[in-house]
Image (cartoon, rainbow, N blue to C red; front, side):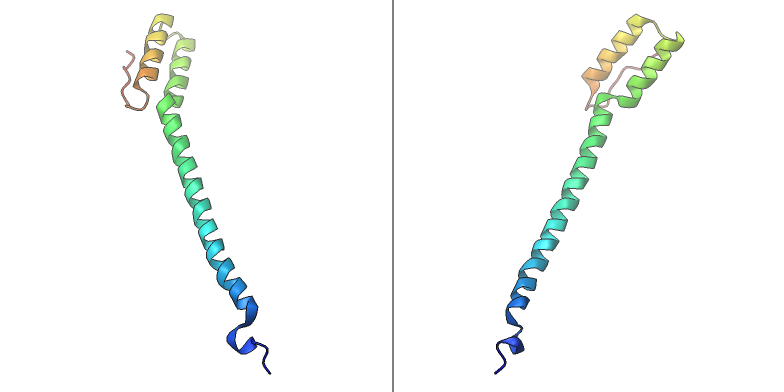
Length: 89
């Protein structure tokens, strides 16, 4: 008597269920990581991360006045997501 080993046995069912679950899980993890990285890139671009830092540096060096700083900061906030911000002289 072969006890079911000739047809693969119960462990083949376990492998047949686990492998697709692992593959689907890995796919979900990859998609979540890609979406997070894209969201971070959009958030950084939307808030004007580098633009804001450059603006603060120009204010600290005295290249722009505090009034110009406020105006451009407001324009950065309004223009986030649209990519439109007023240039500073």
